[in-house]
Image 1 (cartoon, rainbow, N blue to C red):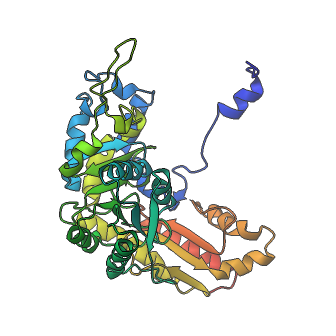
Image 2: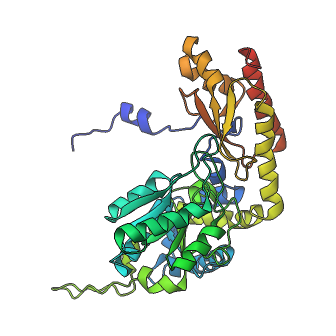
Image 3: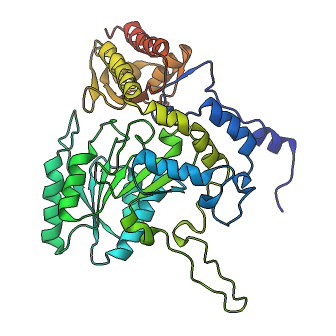
Length: 404
């Protein structure tokens, strides 16, 4: 071993900490929905060790553990999402990759995946790693970047004409990472049902924040993210799927060692035996689940939308500032074009970093460093007092630079 223990090594790795704490307001666009509940913090301490969730594994499968109640949890999750089966995965991206893999096996003649043009990069990588082709549904461009339902049908027919086969899958981004646009899955699910095409909803930014009814929307597969939107430490995702695809997803191992005769018939090949969420990820998701169910009820969802739209109303008085995406907001992830701050950055000693500095001085963290042209934030879960303070601080910074 070339590396030796020394004080420098200890100093580098033994005292890791974060700037963000209870003294600051965190408006990071992809962290708000993943912040742990008090119950999850408590469970995290108890189950932080690797494989700690497997202490009482009697059947060699994480989805069969009864203490803690993983079996009950997955059943409750399926009821919550209104889809027959749910399995944990390493992340929502893995859920998408698995979906495409099993469908490519089921429908080998179909090679094209239809995606909306606001799809996350991992949707594209899932397509690529499965050696499939992509066909994008266009959006309407600046400033709303709105998707039109009828364009999905148009693209489906283009694929059928060009390929001689229907698409393998249609993927809809429920709420996109860039603008926070909400897209209703029901019309797309109806189109997919009429064409007999599997439908995957990517709810990485919405599952656990907005209510989802997979049966009502004709969703065949759903990908969720615990660490983005379900108050869980990461990484963890969920794959929900209809009974129609149960045998495609839950493929039991059939291999046998030629010398040892080893076999693993209880292991699921799709998940490499068990998904790798053996401790902190799954236990924190379980501990936060009651809060997730509560906060996706209508009155809580509407309240969070009001907070985001309150901030938007307040900051629109700033010169050369434009909120991108569809308004009013349904999901609180917000993208703001700030040409005003970009102009300030041109002559400021800190350049684009000045804006993050200004917010940090006011106890607000979460903006990307060095960015002033276009910023994203998320007010999800903040108190009204914090929301109003954030909006006032935003305007106050603009006033400081004569932008109001």
